[in-house]
Length: 403
Image 1 (cartoon, rainbow, N blue to C red):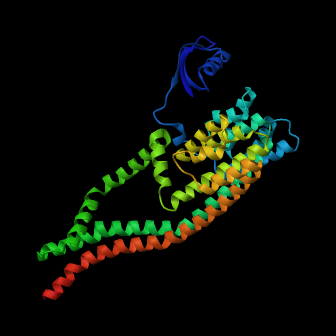
Image 2 (cartoon, helix red, strand yellow):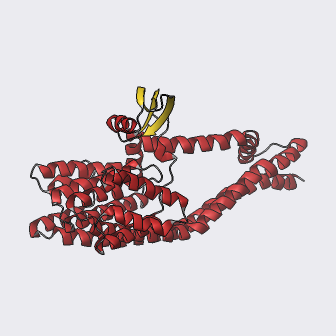
Image 3 (tube, helix red, strand yellow):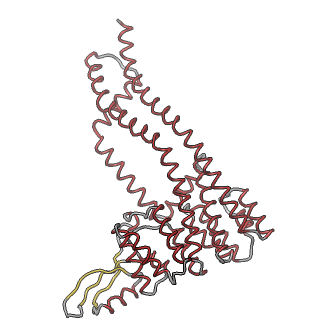
């Protein structure tokens, strides 16, 4: 949080500035330590959420940092403070990362936990599931183990992301080229042919009239359309990150999409299974592991399912029964596997196997989606350009027939 304040410094001079603190009490304590006698102190609530503008720490770099910190802690380094200092020396050439570590160091020196230090810093945005896992690990005294598991998880996620990015490169290239081709045809080619038709005074087919009208709209309003597009993207991004109801609505819609919705669901189930198994292996109770792992799920609909189920789990009910009674029905195979784990008391192994199974299943589905995407895009682009060309050629053919 950012707090604005006015007052007198220890030198007796008037000061008007702002400072960063977790809450009002911490802000007051910081001003007292600086010798500032304040007359005004109030939280500054930003118009826009800071996370929209803060760059996320790349998963690859976060994975490397997590792996190194884990090695330091397992090698006998007495505390996370010294591990952070050692890791900071490996990134001297990167000023932003150095500032990131300085912020964490300062928070740790003030007596905060590693989780609080990560929450407090505003240099990089970090994944919610990562911070929650760190919080649980500190409470369970298994920070080194969880950091290692997080590095493995992030590495695997980065590999999948890289695979998808490389596979999407050609389809995206096709989309970009086709977008400019269609825009060029509608804004340059179509108006020139339209002028020729106007001179001839010939009755035009409906499809030709439609394409000409579309070309006129693009030609006259392309600046407004481009500006509106960027406004829409920005507004959508802001609302998705800020308005919970809107986020839930979009997440629910995404889950209903063919193939893509199933990929999202299996991805979340794989992540949930992996993190719960890691926490159980670190000594966290199953009830607490489920509760905390539900916070790591990005999709709000699925997160709510596990959050509600974890509340039932606290009351003594089985997780499999609680999941089966939720409004959103998750994969039956997952619920059956959980029920088997509850009966055999092998929940950790079951969850680990589920994580591997869903990760492999997700990879297969992503491969199918990417293999279908390229020909679909080519057909779509070909159809659009074909319609424009046909609309322009029809009047010319009819002119030749009349002659």
